[in-house]
Length: 117
Image (cartoon, rainbow, N blue to C red):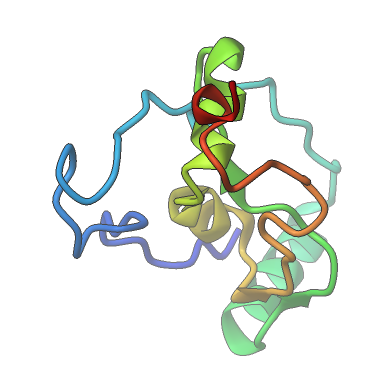
């Protein structure tokens, strides 16, 4: 089916790791969990592929943020407020745009917890 193009772009590529942000080993965007596929006839598969290629597909509710591979790093990752977006996964999905609240609702303190005493 119609796969959108992906050129390797990743979040914060215009910043310098270890200087402007702390890099984390992030979970894989594609192939991390088994994929499920809706079985379609060849005709319907081609029709869906053409639809994806010809139209702009927008999701009004998806979560694009990638989290650290090591769950124990979640709080530090979120506290640093440099969320990584899964552009590779977005390209594989066939979507063109997504409305996402990013860190909205995660309620992580913006003050270093170690400084709170």
